[in-house]
Image 1 (tube, rainbow, N blue to C red):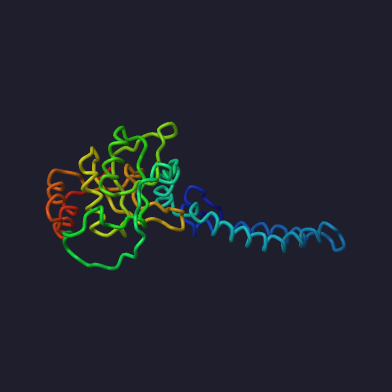
Image 2 (image 1 turned 180 degrees about the vertical axis):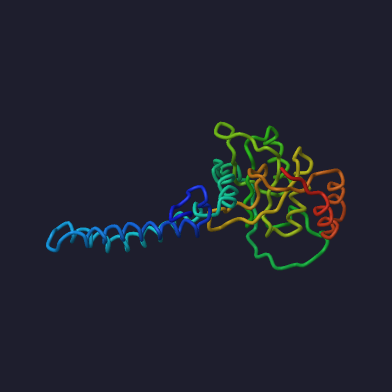
Length: 255
């Protein structure tokens, strides 16, 4: 805002937008009341302007409530909304009809702090709480799905439908930062055998409707950990979390 005027291109944050709304309400109501004062008493126009100024307040509050609840995702700051829209605008299709042979126990996973993955395999892990989506642009879509199924890892969603979108700039796997180490290892052990550039961790925004946990072939420009023969060797061995994290810190690429 400069000289009492709003510069639209500078309004990029929800708090700035809220300030613009409040300023607009103040200006409009001030104009109505100022005009009402200028009109002589007894004129119907004066009463109409006063009623309109009073009615504007609850209408504004209701509109503000709707925007802050139903359209909360759209009120995110530009950088966060870009990440949200990069994923959510890609069409998603449920694969319920393709998963009839997959049975996954719904047991509670306790906290099991460990630095190495030894006893558990991907088949013994409970994947029921994780939602995994696969990009339809992959030419090896069926091969990836088959490999994941063989490892006991379910794919429940398709996104980035080829007749509606373009493929991403880089082939990156985005994994929920809340997913435990043994799940990440089991997933990457399968996917590193395919032509992906790498993977990254991300935090789903539940308020923005992000319910998926893994995007295989995600959209959005974020840094990622490169796939390499060294990483494959780390995963194929007795996966040590410290060694894995050290590799991740030393092998980051930008889009």
